[in-house]
Amino acid sequence: MGTSKAAVFMEPLKPLEIQEFPIPEVEPGAVLVQMQMAAVCGSDVHKWHDSSAKGPMIFGHENVGSVAQIGRGVVTDALGRPLKEGDRVVFRAAPCGRCPSCTQGLTCSVNLLYGYIPSDKPPYIRGGFSQYIYLDPSPWVLKVPDEMSTERALLAVIGNHTTLLGLEKIGGIHTADTVVVQGAGPIGMGGLVQSKISGASRVIVIGGPESRLDLAKEIGADDTVNIDDYPTPEARIDRIRELTGSIGPDMVIECSGAPSAVQEGLEMVRPGGKYLVLGQATDYGQQPINPSLITRKAIRVEGAIAGVAPYSYIVRSLEAMNSVVSYPVEKLITHRYVLEDINDAFKAHESYEAMIPVVLPNG
Ligand SMILES: [Zn+2]
Ligand SMILES: [Zn+2]
Image 1 (spheres, rainbow, N blue to C red):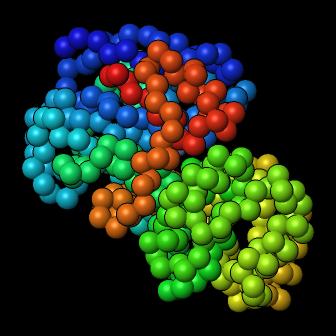
Image 2 (spheres, rainbow, N blue to C red; image 1 turned 120 degrees about the vertical axis):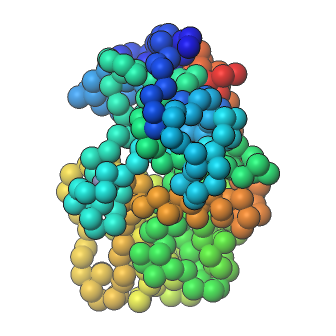
Image 3 (spheres, rainbow, N blue to C red; image 1 turned 90 degrees about the horizontal axis):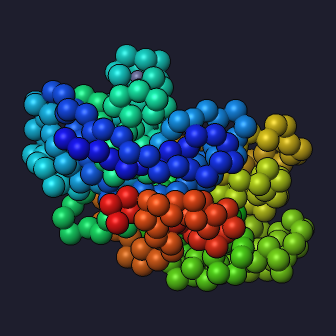
């Protein structure tokens, strides 16, 4: 059935290589997806730097594509709607239903993670930085509403579903709460948007560079604090007190990934407030924090990561992006690349030049 070009990670710090793979026969229950848009995520860049990472592998785990071929037996998407060739979809591997994580209602811990599977044997094409991606039998496939842009569909699966889960775990945002978001990257933008649609009266984003803060304002931030202007934790905490004119924000959402941000957030949040930690996906080892703040200020602390968000959060994140989010979030996708230029996309991510760079594997 032809071939698929893909960008392949061979070894750490080596440019991704464009290779051509045979597209396998679509077996019963499987689905072949033609990729439309894949985001270059911080995790991809991180893995590219990771000296223990092994190739060959086709990255790309935040994906939107269209159904190219449906194996025998697949007739509906995850919500029971008829599925046909040409439908735009987001997708995951199906949960196994019997591992400890599935048993606890969390995301399956043993199923395939597209974008993280070695491409050394058939069916090879298992990541989004490829013209086609092959989904094993019984995939979890969710149709994207016709009226929705591909950009919005992609944003729904970049952090927003995880943030939705985190906000629920911590007891939600109450109407007219003041929220501070630490970090002005893609996760921070998700924290900002989710806070606004949850009823926050005021959201302040801390981060940099200025271009990212300008973008934050365009999609709803009421104020921003540039870390170049306020370079120390003390200066930022004072600035937040000044802006909120109070004992501190009701909620702080950590989306920066900087280990030192956690102590700063604990100091920043008001007594009795909430601290949601979403950005600490990389393990930098032990960090100094003062745990007494949690007790003495009676702070509620929660965390969340994509790997624990049940698929129902993807359903709701997609619906929210389609019907609730009125901000021009498409602007967060700042850079677009054809597959052959994927290494430039990685550079644009690393240099903070791009907010979200995407690859269009079929041009
Ligand atoms: Zn990611
Ligand atoms: Zn499972």
